[in-house]
Every structure is written in C-alpha cells, then in structure tokens.
Length: 136
Image (cartoon, rainbow, N blue to C red; front, top):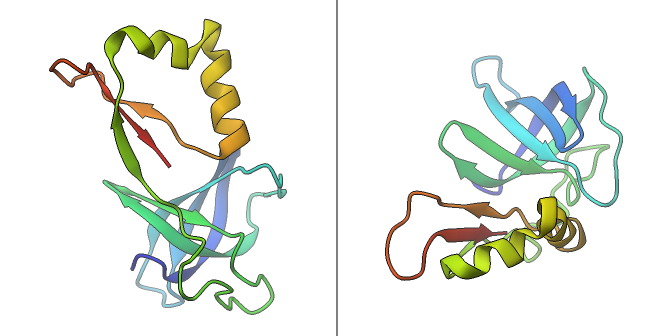
C-alpha cells in the first residue's frame, strides 16, 4: 500500500490540509487519509476528487500527497519514489526543546512552513536526551 496511487474524496478542509476518504477504485476498500496543505496552496473543496499517493502509514491514518500524481489520469509521476517523504527521529535534549518551539511556537511554525517538515514531540520519552522529535 505504501507509495500506491489512490483516489481521494475530500470530506473536510482545514488550514493544515484535507481529510479524505481514500479508495483503490473498488467500492469495498475505503481508508481515512490526510492530505497536508503545502506551500503550493492547492485549493481543496469538500467533494473534490483527487488522485493521491500514499507517503506514510500511521495508526488509523494514511498520509497522502498529490504533488507527484497526474490529476487527469492518476499516473504516478515518481514511480521510483525518488521524491518520497523521509521520516527520521532525532533526540533533542530537554533544555533545547524550548528553543526549537520558540516564543508562542513561532520558530517551530517557521521550520515547518519553510521545510515542509512535520515535527512532533514524544512527551512520554525518558532518558538523558529528553523527548524525541520526528521530522519529515
């Protein structure tokens, strides 16, 4: 399923992206998916049909991207997945977490907007390094 092209129908639009109902084309296979808003600012409207590519699978959620899929015929424009997202985890020492987030979250929003990264912090982590942050 990873890197598969699916058909998505927009169910809800938020400032961060669109929640979609995904299908492989059959009537029996449906998944919930998240299509994140990118710098390109494509307009998503409820009911819109979009060809998307699965870029990440999380518990209960499929994260998809439309940028490398031809919207006319659903053709994968990156079949070797050279442009696929990469997920990496890094340990951030607890005293540095505030510097990454910045005052009222301004720095972390800037990092995400400029890089397209999806930063998350594992607040339950223990150990010398503090929490772990995931960056995509």
